[in-house]
Amino acid sequence: MTEGMNCIGKRLAKCAVCLLGTVLTISLLATPAWAADFPAFADNECVIVIDDQSGAVLYQQNQDTGAYPASTTKLTTALVALDYVSDKLDDRVTVGSEVKLTPAGSSVAELKEGDSFTWREMFYALLLPSGNDAALTIAVNVARMETGNPSLSDKDAIDEFARLMNEKAASLGCQHTHYVNPHGIHDEDHYTTASDLLLIAQEALKSDLIREVVKNSHYGCTSGEGTQMDWYNTNWLVDETCKKIDKDGILVDEGQGDVANPYYCAEATGVKTGSTDQAGRCLVFTGSNDGMSFLAIILHAADQPTLYAQASGTLKTVLGQFERHVWSDGQADVADIALDNPTLPDRLSGATQLAVTTEDACVTTVDTTQDITTKVVWDDSYLAGTADSGVRRLVTTVAKGTQVATLECYVAGELVGSYPLVATSSHTPWGTMDYVAVIAIGLIGVVVVVIIVSAIARGASRKRRRSAGRYDTTGYGGPGRNGSSHAQAHGSAYRAASNREAEPERNRQAQPSRSRQAKPTRRASDASSIETPTRQASAASGSQAAAKPRSRHMRQ
Image (cartoon, rainbow, N blue to C red; front, top):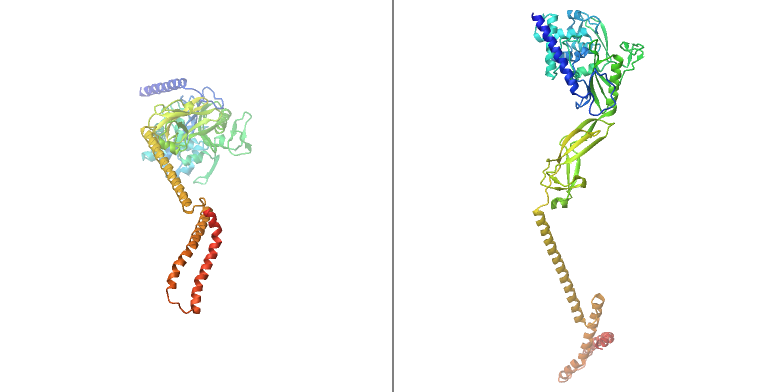
């Protein structure tokens, strides 16, 4: 009875999942907002492609529709195992009886009971050849480690590990994923969605070990018992050569060989394949070049050639047409606008424009084949007037860091991003104090002009007085160096003539006094004493005679 109720419950749960997936599929667009040259996908394929750095969705279709994950399940197996053995990668683990539970005909790493490998080697065995036997060995040993019960049966250990897988998926935000085994062999209760698997892959790729494993096309090692192991990646994107491809383009024998692999892509970096009749062909893959990288999920492809044609086409489209477009680096000005009413200090310093930028870098992954445009929308509560004029009136004070505009980013005419723009400096509109300052500056200017004019006038007056004084003193000659010298020469001549005319009168006044004195005996010394003034007078007369003609001219 209990088993019957459980069976009914499981069927109801499956119906609910299918119904939910159908509703979500109808409600979501199958193509992104702008269409690049992505390959064609069948209507029942589940696809999602993202920029693995920003998380921007580049393409999606049926991304929330329920699907079977097949061996992509092993990414969750690896994540759970790392929770317990990340610090034990060089410890050895022994393959046990659990490998006998490997389904016949499924992909294996060819592990043998009793062999031993390091945990690191077990991750290669799990993810390169997609070994179901390796998945079982990892699950059983981790479950026994987690429970602390080394005697836990293989079946119970696998069930316990599945419980850990579901806990891990839920912790990553997966809402439509459920596991019942560690390898992905088909079970109706073992399902996921492309969106959920994307979350799991993103988490797995945070691990350095997993990234290193999945990018390799081959790995070789020797077991503890001396068996040489060679494991080849089942992901055709990373294997440059193979051993054989049949006439329909299907790779028959994987591994390095003499046949060039037509699906190889040098830019591919992983990640994991999956395939069952019910799941179809599944692939989680990544690629990168110097400026772009991505993560993609394809579930339920028809066959291998179809799957890899779609994968390589997606890789070429994303790496060739998309870029991480920098709308703003958060440092340089994004835009500026002239202000017609800045304050007087701003006018004097030339700060008459309001510049804006974003507070952080703004980057969007865009299709470069489409028109990429931006628009700055100014906030009318801070700025009046029309933006088309290029000049706006500041309505109120704007402090540095205040949002005064919005940057709108468009691709092919559709808005793909909107970012706040903040002022890079403070601005205040023209006010009363500016008028007062202008008037004060004007008055100061008038005073300065008056002082300068007065100083010039006083200087001119003093110059005129000095010139007039020179004319009165000399009686002749004009201002200037030559005129002054000329007047001084005539003045000297005039004084010499006056002295000469007064000399006879002085001589007559001196004679009576000499006549009243006793007549002295004339001696040679007396003659010389009398002779000396005569010679002096003669010399003076000669000097006066030289100046006399100009003196007569002055008297005339």
